[in-house]
Image 1 (cartoon, rainbow, N blue to C red):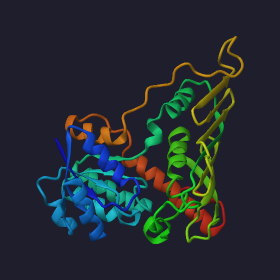
Image 2: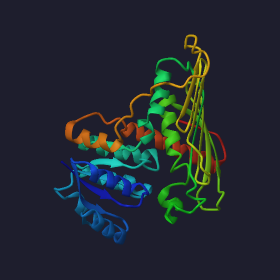
Image 3: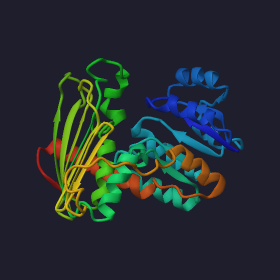
Amino acid sequence: MVRVAMLSKWHVHAQGYAEYLQSLENVTITAVWDEAADRGKEWAGQLGADFEADLNTLLKREDVDGVVVDAPTSMHAEVMVAAANAGKHIFTEKAMALTTRECEEISAAVEKAGVKFCISFPARTRPHHLFAKQLIDEGFIGDVTLLRIRNGHDGALKNWLPDYWYDEKTAGGGAMMDLGCHPMYLASWLLGKPKRINSMFNYFTNRKVEDNAQCSIEFANNAVAILETSLVTYRTPAGFEMYGTDGTLIIHGNDVKLSSNKLEAPFGGWITPAKLPEALPPALNQWVDGILHDKPILFGLEDGTKLTELLETAYIAHREKRTVDFK
């Protein structure tokens, strides 16, 4: 049994994570901490867990094996370093932190403590994206020349996100720091080391953070990624396009089409795969199984740091209105 403490209900996914954990037979939620005490007390009551107003007091509890971090992104480093130092396993919502320096501090604490760490990268568990990676690995795309990924919803347009979602100090940014994480970590996973980046961020609803954003990234292998995200888009299915020297993959929603000159006739045109790879276990399951059974956790410290590197540099490019080279 893994005894879990929920660290804040700030993130919009926190409730979903708690409900999912409560559905697992090998997990129990024992405690809650929240930087907003009233919110935390109410949530703890709903979850049937204890509320601890002091984080260090919670981290000393013997009935806490691991923590799920949904605190403001600006607090991630503080919270996770403290959790690691207390010997608690860590599951965190993306982004891992606001800067690579903070990611390095988290990584050092986690590695020193020897605790399990997992970051939520749901797009990397999905069959469509696993298929894209398989095509690259098996040569059906050839050398990737262009990757385009779009991810958006109408949260800012229809005002269903909480007001604090647009607080740059705590959130670290807007659309790109939120939904943009998914195209970012997919591009990193598929294309490797980034070389340079530029950003075009827009403030359609006149909030203090961007609600409509696009980044263009050149990778060391000469592939270019165009990553788009928005909080002001209406009924936009997720889009994924991958073009290469030997093939093209187009994914719009659940529609998957492939064309590759590596396929023999009669498969020389567009085909729809009869079967996609099996979905991987959700990140929360990977974390729990990693703690209980030492099973592999696929989304770790290095992955989280690479995502933050992309995001941090994207915001520098936006603020300074220039193309920025990666170190």
